[in-house]
Image 1 (cartoon, one colour):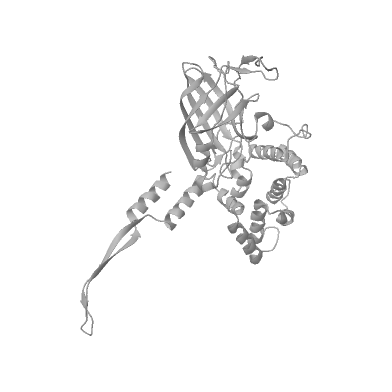
Image 2 (cartoon, one colour):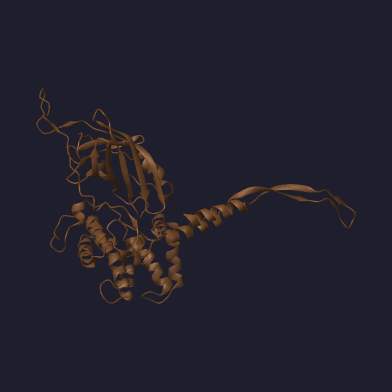
Amino acid sequence: MKLPRWSSFILLLLLTSCLNLASSFAQQPGAGAPQKMHVCITKDCEDAEWVGDHYEGHQNGVVSNRYWLVTWQPDHVELKIRSAKAADGVFPIDGTMTGKIAPNGTSIIGGTFDWRIGVSQSGTLPFTITWTKTIATGGNASPGKPAAQVANQAEVGDISVYSPARPSTKHPNIMLPPGASEKFAEFPDNVRAILQPEYGLTIQESKFHCPVEVDHDADADTALEIARFNYRAGDMLTGHCWLGVAMRKGSTRARVIRAVGLQTGWFGQKDEAKAFSIYKELLPTRDPWAIWFLHECYSDGIGTAKDSHQAAILDSWIMTHEEGMNVVRTLGTDDSDQMREKARWETLLNPPMKSGTHCTQEYVTAGGVKVPGRCDTQSVIDNDALKQRLHQIDQE
């Protein structure tokens, strides 16, 4: 699934994401549920297949979505969906698809897709699912001899790793991503942002132990995502272990997170000077998070003396590069208080306007010249609409 830029993402993504899956009918949860199905959200579709405990949808050979089967009954079908990558640079799309099995047993009717991205975006769209009751086994077809057919069947999977984002109990303004502990809400906003899910994990991957499985064939991105998952869950030792795997496999972002850990004291006593040196060492890579944290070091004197000149140079790079601005946009997106304050500022900077008429009276100058009155129409702030919008933001 291609991910457009933040401002246009949700319409483009959800109008162009569909799963092509072919599948079988089930009377009980998981009994005969689809192995292959065809799911469409609006017009576009893609293929996906059951892979043991969930479905994987692909576009151009790349996993785009993962689907977990919750219930498969004639009068109630429910699947959980998560995009394989972060939709807005921080949160993936999370959603619930519900509907009923049609009388013919090969489609879903009344499909409703409730989606959400973090705390700031959500909506509902219709979807359809169709399938066949049998599928070819493959590998034994020949001219005049079609491939053998088998039941198109899957089973209900463990959806524990899917569990949707939820508000923190201790800090209700902070939205905790799936699997995160209350400790995660206590991290600064920039640390929470860099630890947000970026790639989807399977249930098995989220449960990998370390160092027992450090030789697992997970690539750098997967190892980094497992590290993030464990950091969010509060399992720092397992997070450290998988972070090391990701670094050994060449992940620059893992090195940035290592520096963040040194700066915040994850590995013992804080070592801000070492963290600064890592950020600076990574500057040639142009990793936007390394540049952001290096900018903070120069601005606030973290691990080095304050240097407004260097901070200004990095600030200019951040402001003129989309990847830099994406970092800025991610900060605080899991904090409803910050998002509310941001919305207030945006409203005040771009207030609702209305047309107003200003008239002057006819008058005579000291020299006896008569100046006629006139009326001009101009745009003025609609104070009533502004107050109403600010009130709405406060209530959200």
